Structures are given as structure tokens and as C-alpha cells.
Length: 369
Ligand code: UD1
Image (cartoon, rainbow, N blue to C red; front, side, top):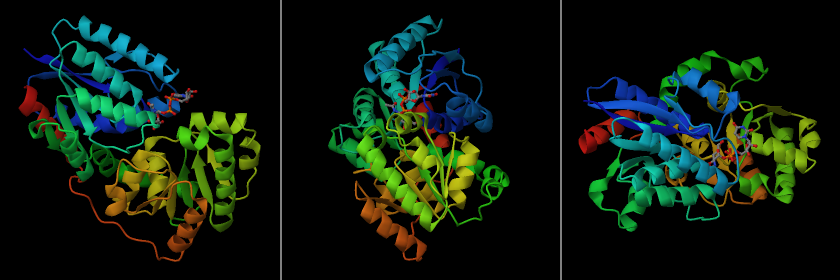
């Protein structure tokens, strides 16, 4: 009899990672009955619903509906609600698959292992070595309790070996997010999003900023607004604004200044395809997102990361990414290099080939079926 295999998704960057794994599970023979659990960490149409529709993700089998909250409160609500649902399955789940590094990832991994249900972590081993980032805590805790560590880039394997994780629990599967990108790119391009904004390909900067380290301090946020105003003097800036950033811009009294900056086009958060279309057509990206660092490397688009570190170092060593730290003067200098055609070019990364989810399913079948 098939036993439930639970996949967890909670926040925006999870959805493009579960989509290819669910699809690969559906196309293969095994004894799992896959079930998707949505924790509800993200709940808005623009942060969740649109991703389900565009990526063809089935309706979740279970919706925990936890919503927003402080880290402790949100994590605790997910833990309690997920535990209850795991216990409610009439057949004991064979395993739980968590992806990425959000609060839902860590909370669901903990709930499962405490019930003795094995956990697989997709995107294991990434480390920024910066424990002031909530995601770093989530990564370290999830990897410490997971049974199967499925790694997306070379640094992940090195980190897990150094932490003493037995090699037989680690598999290099590659990057499932790139599976989704490769599958969706043509459909995204057909939307001609840049053209609908009156922008020609290669003529604009694509910006995403939402990390607490950038947006939660009014001083830092003001410096970033100044940087974007100056950037927009050089080329148009397209900036879909995350709800956290919208809220912080308002409370810092900076929203009006950014809205009226010449050359800056703000929007609500975009759907997956709209965002990908803009990224693929941009001259450069400015970001603090983990996913955008990887996606721009795959697409060969120059990326300036406004953070002090990255847990995805292959995007710097082999890709198109530069981590500029707090140094906005350095970012400006790199923009000059990019516009002058003097910026580095990246190369492709092993396992970022559109088939990572197949290898994830291989590992799950081998370990648990
Ligand atoms: C979360 C993840 C982060 C990821 C980001 C992508 C953690 C610790 N953080 O950060 O790793 O990069 O998602 O988006 O898990 N809100 C809405 N609508 C929603 C969801 C949130 O308006 O659908 C607002 C709420 O006011 C909330 C705030 O955004 O308080 C922040 O949401 P939260 O999930 O706490 O963290 P993110 O900053 O989104």
C-alpha cells in the first residue's frame, strides 16, 4: 500500500522548488502517495496563489493557514499545526520533504523528526555563516535533524562534510529552482513584460529588496533609496516591492520619495513568469534575494547582491554575481563596469540543468521506497 510522502511549501521561494519535485513524483513509479502541505506562511494572491496557478502546482492537500507573526510565534504555530496533521494521517507518513530555508522549512522538519518521521531537505548545506539571518538558523537546524541532505551547489557538500554529516546521507542533486526556470522561460518571454512597460531588452535594471538587514533599518533604507534614485539616472529601474519593504518604506516616510523618483517604476510583487521575464530581459539585477542570485547566474545576467555574504558562493565564483556588502559606492562602480561591457561573464553550474527534481526523486526512492 502507498504511504504518504509529505511535501511542505510555505513561503514564496518554496513554490518554484516543490513544483518540479511534485511533477517528477507524478511521472514515476513508486510506492509513495505524495501530499502537499501549505503552511500559509505566505498567503496573499501575489505571494502564493499566482505561483500555484502559473507553475501548475495542485491545490494543497492540507492548508495550515498559519499567517504572519514574529519568528517564535510563526514557527511555533507551524510546528503545532503540522504535528497535528502528521498524526491525523491514517497511514503513517513515510517521510517529509522540506525545501529552502524559511521558517516553514525548519518548523516542519522539527515536527516530523520528533515523531520519528524521516526528513529530506532539498537545498541542504548552504551557509552564509551569518547567524543574524533568520534563514541561516533555519538552514543549520534543518540540516542537523534531516536524514537526507539534497544539495544544490558545490559549497553545500563541503559545508556538510565539515559539519560531520555522514556522506551516505548527502546527495548532490543540483538546483530544482533551475528546473522551474528552464521550464517556464519560453512562456515568460511570451508575456513581453518589458515591452508592455515601454522598455527594450537589455535597457533596464531589475531590483528586488526585502531582507530585514536592508529594509528594517530606516537609515539603511534611506541609503538604498538614494542609490536607486542615482541608478535610475543611468537606466530605468523596475522594482516590484515585497510587502515587508512596502511597509518599511511607509513607516520610514520614504515611500513618496521613491514613488516620485524619475526613472523608478514600482509595482506590487509580480507573478513567477512576470518576474522571470523581467530578469531575463534586464541589463543587470540588484537584489538581496537568494533565488535571484542563482537565477541570474543561470541566465547570464550581471547581479549585484546588496548583502555582506551569500550562502550561494558558486554564483560569485563561477556565476555573474558580486556580493557588494554595504558598499553602495562599490555597487555604483560595478554598474559602470556592467554598462561599459567590462563585467565578468559566468558559466553554467553542474546540476543546474533542468533535471534536478528527477535526481531528488531518485534519492527519495532509493532511501525510502
Ligand atoms: C520570508 C522568508 C525569507 C524569504 C521571503 C521571501 C523566513 C524567516 N523568511 O521572509 O527567507 O526570502 O519570505 O518572500 O521564513 N506579508 C504579506 N503577505 C504575505 C506574506 C507576508 O503581506 O502573503 C507581510 C506581512 O506583513 C509579514 C511580512 O510580509 O509580516 C513579512 O513576511 P514573513 O513571512 O514574516 O517574512 P518575509 O520577509 O516574507
